[in-house]
Every structure is written in C-alpha cells, then in structure tokens.
Amino acid sequence: MAILGAPAPAIFLDRDGVINRSPGPGYVTRWEEFAFLPGSLTAIQALTHAGWPLFIISNQRGAAQGLYTRAALDEITAAMVAEIARMGGAIAGVLYCLHDDADRCGCRKPARGLIDQACRMRPVDLTRSYVIGDDLKDIVLGRAVGCRTILVLSGRTAADAVKQWPVAPDRICRDLEDAASWILAP
Ligand SMILES: [Mg+2]
Ligand SMILES: [Zn+2]
Image 1 (cartoon, helix red, strand yellow):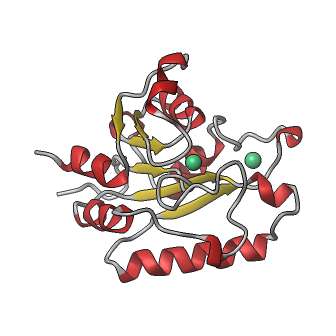
Image 2 (spheres, rainbow, N blue to C red; image 1 turned 90 degrees about the vertical axis):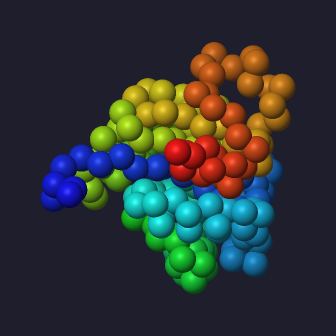
C-alpha cells in the first residue's frame, strides 16, 4: 500500500519533440499547429495506467518574445490535456518556463526550477524518476537532479549528435512509445 505523502517516482516529459511534433527552431503558437507524434497518446495512456505520475516541463521562450500570449498557451495546454484524457491518459501538472535567457530565471531548462515546482505539487523520489526529452538540455537537467534520463529521437536531436554531447542519456529511444515500452518492461 502506498503511504500517503511518501515520495513516489514520477516521469517528467518535455513537450515539443516528445509529445507533439517539434516545431523546429520555432514554437507552437496555436492549437492548429499542435500535432501529436505517432504513439505518444497511447504511451501516455499506458504510463498512466501503470500508475506513473506524469509532469510536462517545457521551455516556452516564445511567450517572452511575444510570439503568443499566456492565454494562447493556456488554450493549447487545455486542448492537449483534454485529448490526452480522452485517450485514457492523465497529467499531474503542466509546467512552463515563459522566460527568455536575459530574464535569468531559475526555471528555463536546463535550470531545475520546473522540476522543483512539480516536487512542491506532490512529493517525488527523483532518484527513481525519469526525464524524457529530445534535447541536450533535458538530459543535462535530468542528470543534475538525479533522475534517469531518456533521449527520444522523435524531435530535434539526431542519433549521431549525441556522441558530441558532454553528458550521455541513460537510454536512447526512438520516441515516447519506445521509451514507455522500455520503462514498463518487466
Ligand atoms: Mg523538446
Ligand atoms: Zn523561467
């Protein structure tokens, strides 16, 4: 039986390039531009079904740059979470950094602020948790907070590029579906 309030493992998912198609160097500015990657919804459903709390942590500097408003981002988030729920998944929290580098905030990945925010929403055992992302900054963050890290190749990183990185992910997966299968493997 789970002890109420005891730290439990969680999964921290990057958004663009993991859940939805990466907008390249740009940003998703409205729901019409948001496209779920193949298998991501069923992966989220499977992880939810297995009892994993899922947090989405995403840099959205485009807000600081005025490319979209906070209200527009909230609309995208609501539509995304609704579609995830319709497919049987659940999200414990969606946390965004809306700052630009010049703001020197503590939440723009690879800074750890978004994960700290999630840990204030519910106690998380970071050593048994995962960070899943498509970018070096996700892997750097995961390592810094003591999580296991999974790089997915469904976004902005090609497999070859990883060899040049200063840190290696614990695992490289094709996409979120592949990552979920690996996490859930007996
Ligand atoms: Mg990404
Ligand atoms: Zn920030």
